[in-house]
Amino acid sequence: VDLSALEAQVLFQASGGVAGVVPCGTTGETPTLSDSERRSVIQTTVATAGPLGVKVIAGAGSNATAHAIELQSEAEGLGADASLQVVPYYNKPSQEGLFRHFMAIADAAEIPIVLYDVPGRSGVGLSVDTVIRLAAHPRIVAIKVANGSLGFVGDVAGRCDLEILSGDDPLTLPMQSLGAVGVISVLGNIAPGLVAQQIAAGNR
Image 1: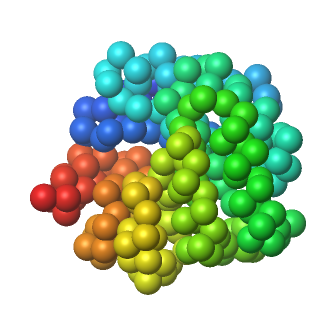
Image 2: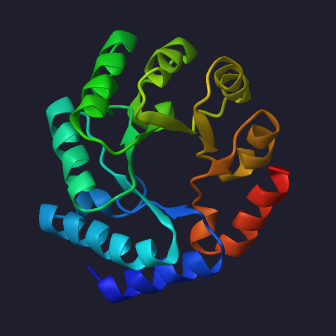
C-alpha cells in the first residue's frame, strides 16, 4: 500500500473542503487488502485527516455479523469517527435479519454507524420500515443511499431524522431536494472542491 499517496489524497480532499473521507469503503481495492494493510490504511487516514478537522468514516462492513462486529470495534480502536456498514452481500438476509445484523453491530462499539443500502451490489436492500426501526438506535446516525430510489429518500426523510447521504453522484442534487444533506462521492476523489461546492449550494 502506497501510504504516502494515501496521505496526499487525504490532503487533497481536505484542500477541497470535504467534511469527511471514507477509507476502506466497498469501492476500490479494499477487498484485496490484508488485515494489516486495512488497519494501516485506516490509521494513516485518521492520522492525516484528524488534525485537519476532516471526519473519518471507516468501511467496516461484512456479510458475516460476527466479522462486522470485529471490524466495528477495530475501527473504533483505530480512531475512526464512524463506520460505514454495508447491507450484507450475497447471502440476502430477510428484513428481520438485516435489522438484527445492524443492531448487533451498533451495540458492539461506541462509534456511530452509517448504514449503506446498495441492493445492486448486495442483492437485497433495506426497506423504509427497517430503516425507521434502525434509526431508533442512538448510534445509527446516517444512511448512504445507492438504491436509485428518490421515493425511498423522501420516505426516510419524512419519517426519521437520520442524515441521508447520496451514494450515487448523478442523483445527489435531486436527493438533496428531498432531504439528503451530503454525498459519499466517487467523483469527489478527483474533484473534491466542486462536489463540496455543490453540497453547500444544495443545502442553502
